[in-house]
Image (cartoon, rainbow, N blue to C red; front, side, top):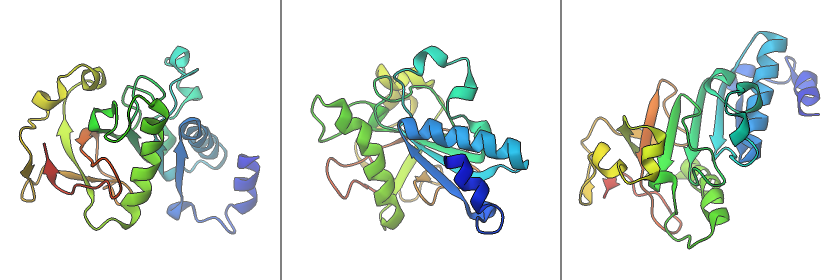
Length: 202
């Protein structure tokens, strides 16, 4: 049904150059499937797909079959926010730019509730649209699994909370992310809205 709608809209109504597809959880993989099909049918990729904590359950057995889940070939630029990696969300890098928020584990303000952690990706991305503070990430060269086993702070050279406003290595996450980014990034947030901490890290 979604592809039929895309067919109906393209090209008279839908401006492909301005299309940004966003999916949450299982919807991230639906967005990827739409991107694959659209590129195949029209020989034109979407400019951007954003995956908000792409679903892991039922997809963990399909890791070698990229046709079933979102990946970086589904659009010119694929950015992904991870907030519940290894539980409800995918652990490994999915897009061109993958942001691991608060180590993508238990989110601040969420206590023993993986659904709270999972949904936080939606809340944070929504806030990024109008945030004047912004969500800023530190580039990390570690493997995704290391986010879950305690190596992130050292690998990302994080220490006591400090103001990194003059650090040119920081990148903006969310709606206004640079579409030239490639890699994995760590983002810190607060425990309640507004979640954005700007360039403060700890």
